[in-house]
Image (cartoon, rainbow, N blue to C red; front, side, top):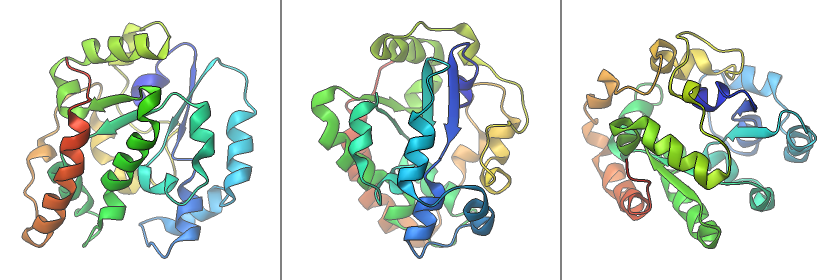
Length: 218
């Protein structure tokens, strides 16, 4: 999201269906009340707000797979879908810093795989965070070609700190990305996986490996 926000032709939205997800499930996330106060929990209202925009020409919507799971996902057929994946060990260890016992639904990888299978005949783009970090420019250039837009070098860097397009949940989740100024490996990527989450990691790894084979190579 931060990368695409640097483009001259793009507007970005940060998880616009978060309130829909929280209001439709019994999930308790940090900052839940703030999310529900600042976003519509009606999915059709959110869609109308997103797709009524005609300027600028590129609309980038950052979604979480588990947010999409509770929606009518027909609108995805109108979009170019990019699947961002990451080693489940890193995802689960990250979630465990904020949520004691994250579930498969929290990390989203199972439903992300199901979505990929649904749209596989549309040649969706898969980006693995580890491969992206090996050569960000190469992966982003390939992504832009597949989307049909021109690569812009400013996509590789951004200013540190909070952004005006961050969701209200940023204070709970975005500490590391707020310190970043580009695509760089974070020290927290090596934090240990809590032992009680080993079984979740093993289960999630199956979906990750199935998606990884489709990821763009640096």
